[in-house]
Image (cartoon, rainbow, N blue to C red; front, side):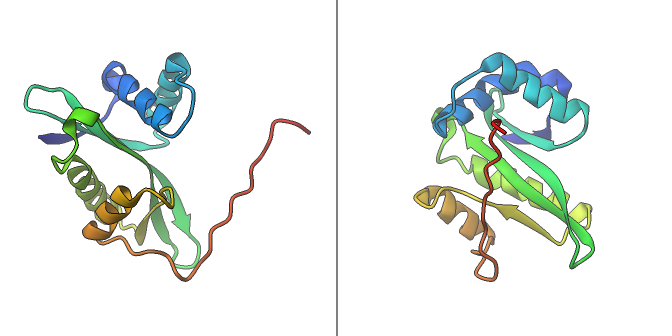
Length: 151
């Protein structure tokens, strides 16, 4: 397995797995909109996407990180927003390798930390994150403010 950073040339390879990721979390597929979303992120350099490829260049998984900043530490923060491993590639340490690559990039960009969220019932993801060194945030409680399209 090798990990590479995605470019616009990888959109056709990435989009089907991104659609499966969205479906996994209950979203409708929308392949054209999903591709356009990924294309915007890459074209505008608004995210960093890593791909895990098998020896025969089959996409095994991906992760997408968004930059943020910490005003208190005056440093960059990376948000590990999306991570997904293809069903036939699970239990092959794909997520571990993707996260380790993301962690290396975070260090290289002098980030103070990486953040990740997952469903409270996703025990597999929680164990993976903890095994790599993520700690559950006990200092801050997170809230979400949904912004509807209605005024």
